[in-house]
Image (cartoon, rainbow, N blue to C red):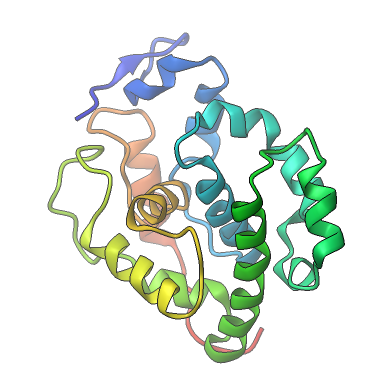
Length: 205
């Protein structure tokens, strides 16, 4: 389990912030803030699948490049990518050039379109797997029953590179769980944001 460490302003934060200066802004402004917008959720799932086995610092540095390469992660546009786009992406030094993961993003974009048709929105489907209570201490695990359930549901619907660990990292980042450690300056802020959140439900876009 991580313990809070003082940042440059003296306020306690999750210990992983100390690994790189740019982590502080990401921690304070993004990590764990609840997201209910479809494209933001799709982007996070894609980046987490690309990040598996690599440093998140690399992805913060390359995130703008990824957004440019993948049409802003608008899954309706990415769903129409073809072999020419795969070739273009494999030649793009600004992103991680992994054929399997590039093809998975395109595949997952098509699956996301299907989910919107059946569920009303991607958010409505993903937030259905928000755990109702958390028994484990923050940052004490890399998977959870909820991430296993969501991973299984996505893979049954044809999604790729969405294993339980990747999905748990996604749930942490998008605020489906509050995994800021006890004592972190952001934990109570995220808890208030989650309490005030209007959860997405099935319906037309």
